Image 1 (cartoon, rainbow, N blue to C red):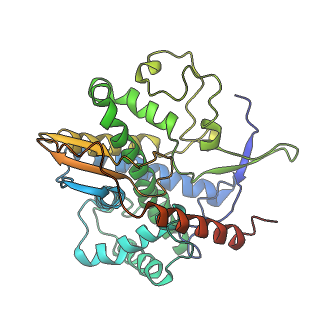
Image 2 (image 1 turned 90 degrees about the vertical axis):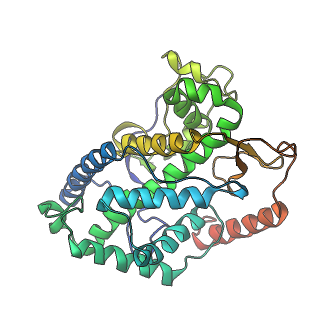
Image 3 (image 1 turned 60 degrees about the vertical axis):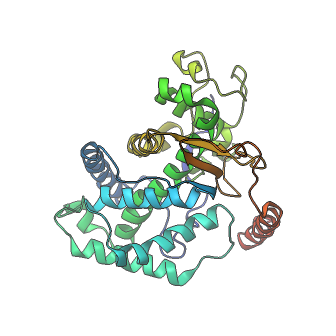
Length: 345
């Protein structure tokens, strides 16, 4: 692919921690290099912790409805444990998780305005955890991390690591579970191929968007490039075996060129661990609602029926409630977002 060379994000600030935390800005300067060095060290520490985390003590209970936020909580708890090498206390969870949820609600257009009090609690708790500098913290006594300013420290731990794990891994896992309902055999035979095929069909929510270095060229967004179906055989069909060959376009869901997401490996490994923990429970089955439209951003959540053992006769016909109200709400919040971000200019 001949994509325009990218230099920096299209938007210098993210909507997630606004107004507290700037996006992981990739300008090539001393501060950027220092922050990326710290991130690389943290990345390797998380991989080490992940290798020791062979199992996760969790189970999705039998239910009908949206499992997205239940998966989101699992990813939050897993990410917290990988970063701080322990489970969060009740106070830590109550201070942090509502803010982490609010971030994704903005991205998913569940709402249009951030809940500033819960964002402030999230920021304050992250800062307290950092200042405690517990020996099990992955950046305990890391000189480069200590030299970063407060905002950069909170941004790196909260946004670059914890929030990325929560949002990206939750989306990927939910897409996999929906596809598993039709392709369970393929997932059991070759999970890596199925992860690639999931990412090809449903690229992740964008956290990385790029300006072109040449002003005459257009900026680009990795996932929107991935949604171009040119060059793929039967592009809209789930076919895991296509990844046994190299005769297809590249997978761009994790980005492209030097801006490729550096968290690809531990993000994928976390999803594998949680996915296998869920699906290998005895008698596990899953069935999407008959009025559920599988889209890449889960505008109505991940509406499925999860059970164990004998299936009900109604699993193929059940529907989730309030779909029309959700569609109207999403339309309103999208219009507010356009006005708020001056996207009409």
